[in-house]
Image 1 (cartoon, one colour):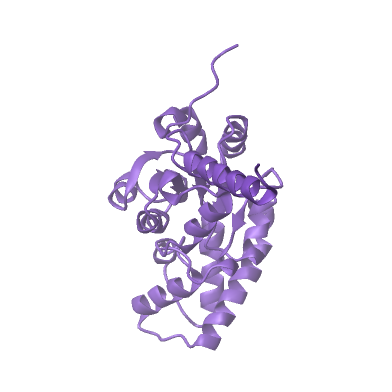
Image 2: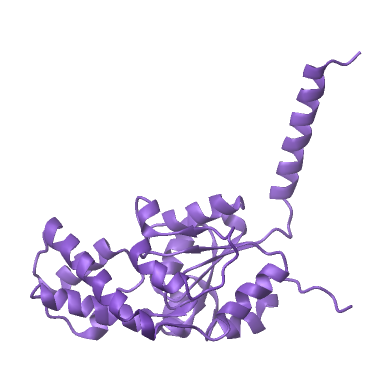
Length: 251
């Protein structure tokens, strides 16, 4: 006669088998989205905010050089800008510059707009029961201005710089997002607009898709590891089948 302990053990192994089967399902798929330049038209507002912050600290840099670093963590970005100018930046000064950037970016919040097709793309994934998460190198203080433009389901994981040890081009953000979705990173598609997004995707062992809406060129994104490149979220939406998303058959 079976007892409660035996039944509990059987149920445990059944649950474990179900979990293993789900993780091996060839149809399982999830999307991990960058935020700035990928879903929201905010890259150039960040560029101008960084210029204002660096100028206030006596660092003069052409806008195009700042743009080339957008998408990586603020700390790495300041290190890269130091390399360009030869002017060292102390830890205290770096923290001050990042605070000035956050304040300058907040002033530009009214000019932020959702990129064409971004909300429709997220809605389409929701309708197709494809999970997705947001993973941004920005800190929550700045990211909140862009996140509030999107109509995200309340259960959508959002991972910001504050939550991980290292931001892009390290893979931490995408690994954390995949973990919150409970989807193996190898079954995730990372969508980003910068070479730093795609480098982080490669280091995480995820498939990368590039968007041109952040200002990087198609060849740059493909050299960084993009499997496909599209103009913007609307263009990606039109080609979701190329990423393995199967629409529901017509009724």
